[in-house]
Length: 109
Length: 123
Image (cartoon, rainbow over all chains, first blue to last red; front, side):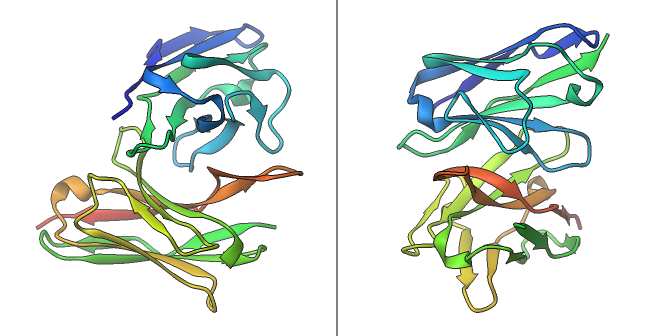
């Protein structure tokens, strides 16, 4: 099983600041099999990034994704109030199971 | 527009089974993958399995392999997820999700989600 380790667990930042979220895999993951989701309380996850670096529908360009192999990063260049949420990475390499990371909570400082 | 509407909350006894539905609209149901993902309170999401809408192939997480069944009714454009031998650890919100499509291509990645169904397992 591929384990995804997200860091930090919590990121305390102010609106306008830059957020850098890390997702590290225990084995290599193809870039096209890595995604990021945003989740707010009481809501379903929302696809932010697919294929590691492609933005989902209506995701603003302040969100960017990079990485390959075992290290992936989601960056939010300037935090807006609506960006404060929990972010999960997901991998679906050929071998099951599909796994999510434990999440990074981006909270208002 | 793509819509996935899930059935209502359920309360089950340990040992029972459940069957959840996910009614879809706004797209050609048989052309897309459908996933089921659950999320226990305060926990990360957990992928349970998926069905390939094109060829009907199914894959389940090894954790649920022995007690989960995902089915579809193409006429009703509805996906179903059955889970047997419930225990309190199965208390969670269960989501259905469809594969994501950009303006130019479609992907396995869950991209459109239902609103979730809260399942509570308690004696």
